[in-house]
Image (cartoon, rainbow, N blue to C red; front, side):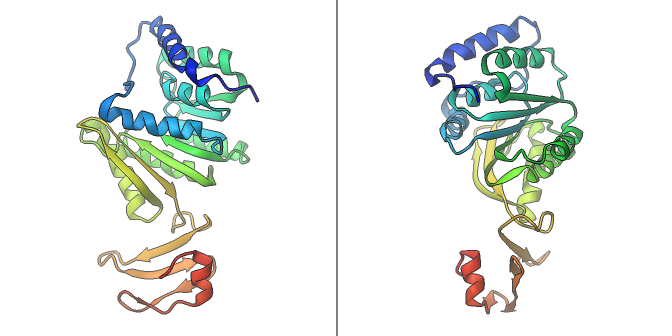
Length: 261
């Protein structure tokens, strides 16, 4: 694996990257280098990049390579970037970064709703420590990316999604997709940061649920209308309430789950 770039050179590399993609003469879509409220996302990504336990980063939405550069320049992680490749500057950016970081950058071009499951089928050994969903903003695309990444996520992972919570029209798809999986109990949200009308990002992790019961963790099933817990499952152990909000839980279930119920 190539030696990581000195973090102090990130600003220089960013300038070089932007100068390179600007030669294409195509306006950049969707990128803003964050300051103020927007800086919260930048800080979060910097923290993830500098955490040496996160050795594999997977992202939909390579775009012009700004977030990819942030991880490449500040870590030794391998990156897997999924992007439609509809912008000419995307492949120019990929070429620029590949020359500097070699095989650490892996670009997979095409429709992520198809390329993600295909990639996983061919490379089931790749386990993502950080998952970033920042690709297509249509509801079906955002939901598909979230669902398809689950099977690639390592047991100890961080999941992030861009443009939710926020209020612009292009946020509707990511907002709805993220909320659906949170409401289903398939994603545990740990941070939701609204950064103004058109920007936001959320952080969480995949947890065991009916969609992916094999994922390690606790499955909590609630009533469709009441929201009351109907059953809690840890592995093969099941706890059912004697009455609303009241459980008779065996001690070994509490021990296995790590929770006090």
